[in-house]
Length: 151
Image 1 (cartoon, rainbow, N blue to C red):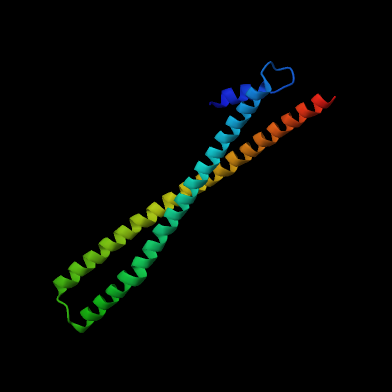
Image 2: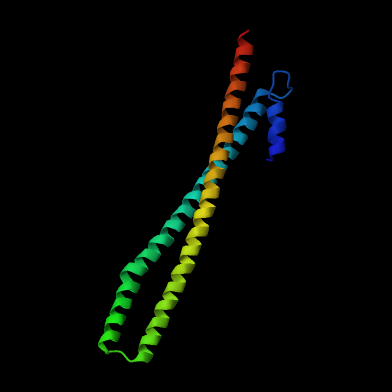
């Protein structure tokens, strides 16, 4: 169901409309269900992206604190004491540099995920506001019809 169809359906929700009340209620239900699906989808994607961003940051912190820094410290201590030949120090340093490169890529991925999460969060707010307004409009139309029937 497109937005144009929904708009036309909402315009036809007036007392002069030829549609039966059952059709109007079905249209209202379809509109509200579509809005609920959109809100749930956007919420799920936003939460997933926030979790990915957080996981990436925690991964980099974990690797740096518990793996890279201690090994680099040990390498520097062993090299200062003369326990490692220069060639082995260069090989270990190149491995550590590769770990830093990977961590940099993971941080870049976290930045992209956080940016997308922020965009999806804003979309979630806008779509949920729009869904709330539609729900209020449908309730007002229903109240209006009930008041007209009582007259």
